[in-house]
Image (cartoon, one colour):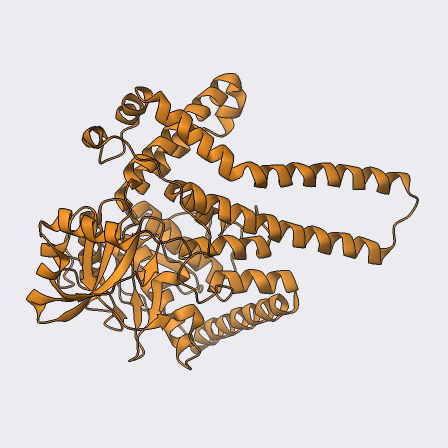
Length: 490
């Protein structure tokens, strides 16, 4: 019988060097009926194509089946491939679907590394002596205690938010009034031509994209927490049109930079030197890229023989700005929950915010990001040597400064090389390995974090946002994939 690969999918995390320990082996195989079954430690735990789950003890080997079964499997795979090809062709003919697919591939991003001219990020600075009182891990009570005693800062931030967002909100209100007037006019007018309806929809789509562009500017101006919110919206086709998604995707790596003198002062304070020249032979005078939490410089590290490195430096006042925004949003969430208890039963804004904020806080700790980077590199080193992960330099890394190997290359989504398709397939394999094998998942795979190196390998960057996947979720995904392969949709 022609079966699926007999290499088990291990659910334990890979230790450095690629050795696994303490993991549970999950081995998908095909039975005589062409159904995929899942084997775990000598025990059959699932027959994927059946509605029932078998728990009886079986042997590890299956008897070989006839060549007709192999032909059936081959035909099924070919049918699935043809079906997917047809879906892609249909998507290319549909303008909206084509834009959406381009968004997901990152093809609609510009090559600029910074935000448009004139865009300024509004941050909140607290008095120097009070900074140590803010928690370094997410603690709603500690954050509330800190900001509740600073009403002036709260009012200042609310004024900032109102000032930055006022133009966008006014335009949004005007759109609602205009739509109401137009709809009322259409109801009173007998009959509407097809061409008029198409023009109206096209105008609404163009207006939606314009509002998304305005919203991007607003979110950028309000700082890191709101930029992260926009990034989350940029991958939600159920909430936004493809054109609007394309605008918000620019938040992934098109944000304003800040003063390089301030960045150098942060480096000296965090790494304990008098001048950056004490550590680096040279350092780029201006950042080569900027993100919501920090910006990146290139430098030559003295202690490593002039090795070229990337130095990521966190923005000043990020902790203060993030915590005050979380405090304000959480306060409004509690007020709304008390006023509308039935709504809270359906959507608990406070609980959702707390879950999101706890992960967001991890991104503020660059030492943890360095640990994530090293762990991820070790987990794929043995089986995926074609995937490049930058090495880290712990001696020159702190909570607010991260020094890593500089990797030359171009964004995979913008590369025109002939091997891009192969690298995309490699990326899919890499993420399936994270999902079904190591359980340590890179949770920020936007186009800016995927690089094609000059020697044709795939580099993955930015390990600030990672997540753990337990065995139960892994088994569920294996079953779902098996159902999809065998077209068992019930």
